[in-house]
Length: 329
Image 1 (cartoon, rainbow, N blue to C red):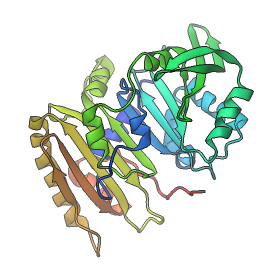
Image 2: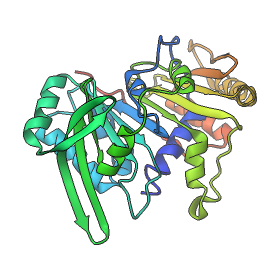
Image 3: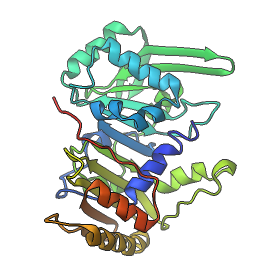
Image 4: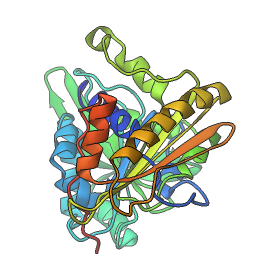
C-alpha cells in the first residue's frame, strides 16, 4: 500500500496539481464532498463513480488495499448500483499513511450524489448486518458489517455507515472511529482554495502537501523528488476530460496558505502559464492566474498532446490523463 494511496495518489495529485488549473469562475463554496470531509483528511480524491471504476490506474491503485477494494465491490453489487449509468460520486480520503502491515489504515471511502440516495441507505440497512452505532458528526449512526478479513498477522474489520446527509462511508473500524472522533467540514484555507475549482468536475482532489510528504520521507522514499514552497497549506485541483482526444482538457489548480508561501508559488504559476500559452493553438482561452493574500489559482485549457508538451518542458513526465469524458445518466 506504500506505493498506492500513500504514494501513487499523492504523486498523481502532485503531478497533476503541479500542472492543473481552474476551468470556470470561482464557485460560491467548496464542492459538497469537500464540505463533508473529515477534518483529519490529509488527502482526498473524488470522481464520478463510472469514470473511476473504468479507469485502470484508479483500480490498480485501489487494489493495493484489497480489503477496501473488495468492500466497495461488495457494497455496489448488493446495493444494485450500476457504475456505468449512476451519476454518483466516489471519494477516497486518506487520514493516515497506510503500510504493508496495515493496508487499510487511514483509508476512508465516501459515496454520495447517487441517483437514489434513499435506496442506497435501504440497501445498507437490509443487506449488511448491524453492529452497534458510531457517533458521527453529532448523530448516532448504525454501523454495518461489510467485510472481516483475518490472514496471518493481518486483520481488517471493514464497516459502513450512512450519515444524516445520505452519504455512505466505508472503512476499517479504526479509521471510521478516528474520523468520528474529529471534526467535520473543511478548514478555512481548504474551503478557500476549493472554491476555485469546478464544482461538478468529474475528477477533483486536494492534499495537504507537507503532511503527505512528511509521511513519505522515510527510508523508502527519502529521495522523493518533490519540492514545494514552505507555507502551502492546501493544494486543490480539478480536471474535466474532453469528449474526444483532440479537444482540450479543462484543468484547475488552487493553493492556499501563508502569504509567504503564496508569494513563492505565484512566479511558478506564471512560468507554467507562459509555457502553456506558448503551446496553445487555435481559439483556446489563454491561461489565467488569480491570487489573493493567502490563495492563488490557475486556469488552463490544453489538449492531451499539449499537456504532454508542457509536462516535458517542466520535466514532469509521470502524469497520465483520462482519455474520455465519463458518461452521465
